Structures are given as C-alpha cells and as structure tokens.
Length: 510
Image 1: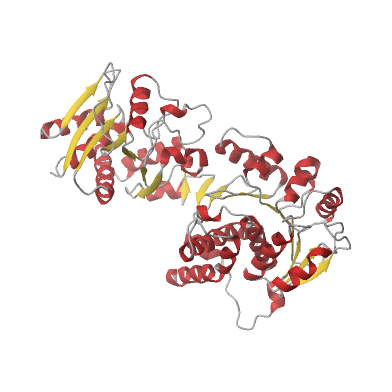
Image 2: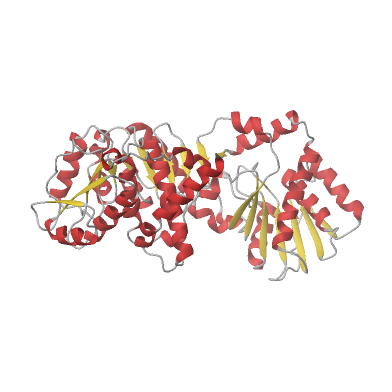
C-alpha cells in the first residue's frame, strides 16, 4: 500500500473530485458515512456525543457526521464549531446549514472565547477540528479546545487524523496541543505519522476507511513510502522444486556469540535453519561449541581458537551468505574480525547488534561495507551510527540518506519495522506485536535474514520477506501464548506456520 505526504494527499483528493467526477460536497458525504458506520460498531448506543469541528473540510466532515448521527435516537449530539476568524470553507458552510436545518442536537459556534462544555468521562468526543492540511502547531482557541479535550478523560475518536498532529515531522510541534485519540479512523490509507512511536499517544488504535479515492492517481503518483501487505510478500516467496536438494538452498555462515552470550548464537542459528537454508555453519568461541552442537544439532560448528570471544575470520568465499553480530561483544580482537570481514567481502553481508556498535566506533568502516548488505539497527544503534534524531521521522530520513550513501539496506527495527532501500524508499512492515519486544528477538531476525539470503533471495527480497516473516511468526506466537509471556524461541517455533500462511495467501491469490 502506498503512503503519501500531506501535499500528495491533497493532490489525490483534488484529482478524485475532478476525474471521478464527484463534488467535494459529496466526497465529504461519502467519507462521513464510512466514519459513521465504523463509529456505530464501536459505540452502538446510549452515549452523549460531543463533536468538535474546525473551519475547514475536516470540520465539514465533522458536521456531516453530526447530522447523520443525530438521525439515530440513541445518540445525544452536541456540536461545537471553532471559528475564531468568522471564516469557514464553502463545504463547511453548507454542511453547517444542513445540520441546523434538521433542528436536532445542540449547536454552538465559538468565535472568541472557548468555554468548556460539561463533558464527563463516560461521554464520547469526536474530533474533527483539523486534518492533514495543518502545517503548524495549534494556537488560540484551537489549542485551548484540544487541551480541554485531553483533560476530560473521555474516549476520543479522530476523523482521519488527530487534530494538531502533522502528517510528517512533528519535531517543532507542541505536545499539549495535539488531540490524544482513543482511536483514529483514517480515510483510505494510514498517514505517515502513524508509524512513529512518539505519536502512538495521539493516534491510539487506527483503522482504515475506504472512501473510494480515485485508483488511477493512487497508482500513478510516485512515493517513497509503502506499507507492506500479504499479497506483495507472497509474490516474493519462491516455490520449491520436488527434486530440490539441500545444496540448492544455500550454505550460510553465522559469526556469533561470546562468553555469556552463546544464547544469541543459538537463537540466530535455529532461526536461520527454520527459514529454509540448506546448510549452516556457525563460527563461535570455543566455549559455545558444545552448547550449540547440543541445542541446534542441524548446524555445523567452526570453533574459534579463543575460548571466550571471536578473534578469527573464517574463509567466507564458499558460503552463500554471511551474517555477523549477535552476541559477539565489542572486544578489540572481535572488532578487528568485523573490520576484516567488511574490507575483504565482496558479497552482501548481514550486520547486526555488536557488529553495528563496532562500526559506530569506527565510522570509516561504513564506506567499506559491501554493496547491498543489510544492516539491522534498533533506534539507539542507528543513532550511534548516524547521530541522534529528535523524532522518528528524522531518524527515518537519516536512514534513507545513509542507505543511499553506502548502497545498503537498513532495517530500522520497531513496532512498524522499516526496510529502507538504497533508492531511498521506505517500507513499513505490517506484522508484529509488542510481545516481540523481548531479548533475542533481534537475533531471530538476523537468522531469518541470513537463511533467506543463503537461498539466493536478493537483498531487497531478503529484507522485505524476512521482516514480514519475523513479525508474522511473532503474531502467531502471541496467539499461541500471549504478548506478555512470549520469548524469542516462540517466534522461531512459529516460523513454519508463518510460511504456511504465506503460501496459503499465494494459493488464494492464484
């Protein structure tokens, strides 16, 4: 699914109006009906509804929703139109007139001072003050109204976007003038700001409402942002020949572990094998040899001569994929191994965890990383590589610049893990859950990526498919266990079912 900037969203709306064709008045009706249907499923009856509308077309949406809801006897509707400049859009003016003509519900237009209405905690608020057209922090009575809304403790349902939240970067925004929604009903597609952790407090849960914006402009309008969907992922998945043998699925080399962190090597190794690689060799410190041979007997080991850490780089030319980082630590001898690998390798490698911390301590190594390699930092690891960011949007922008500069793929791990390509394109992942925020989950992802690359998936395919599979297995694990009780091994144990689900999607599509 394509994601768009605020300017592009306006272009899509205007194109739909001109080329469907449909009047903006009727497009608002369409959107309001979709919102009302979704809202009534969540709040079916017996509530007092306070609706806040702004002077633009988001306010027109709110007034239309108010009119539709007022036709149901189970709702008591009160509408507050914030209009400090005595100037509202034409659509807002017409929607106001239609609402007032019904003579149902209560209506107040606020032009000067905002006097808070008597809202109780068990009342419901619908927020329609501003939408994606906002480009600066709220002020005046708009800010006062939002601050009041947030103080009520009532459930808040936002129309398209919480008022005050900007679509892209909110670094200069004011946190206390953004609506904190319980749920956001977003028209057609999610907004970019939904995917950044600091905005969860404003967006709440979100769901999509299809308002039938013109498919041609959505298809043709270029964008740098996407939200991955099952059909796209199933297109990447390769079918296996009945006559295949293990050699066709590649031989992976995993360099992992140090004293006290052999578990990271075990998790990455098992995940690599479960992702489908034909063979796996693990280069580990001697202290981990018996542990790994016992816990993952399907893997071969290549013990380092050192007991407690990695000090040697094994021969890599014969392997189809190489991954380094889980649990290796940052000793000087290990750092030299990372340096030697990066400077000697010509094929893409998987770089994770301590390998990234070593690179952050030796930034000149960034320029030497083999083309189309995959880096898998969490936010703090990325900040060590590229400098601190004030917001997740800024971090994403830095990652896009770095990916292009070093010609590599960067996987920014998080709730909506982002795969960022050298072409400065960002794919937000649609699978995964909070239960995956557990020790070893990143090691599992590294193993999956390593196994896919060994099977000769391209770096792009490896990153997109690997992240999606990782999240899907996590979702299945949460269903089997719970988010609270999940451990990294549970993700590995559900990889087979995750594959089955993807294959089923592919068969359904066929």
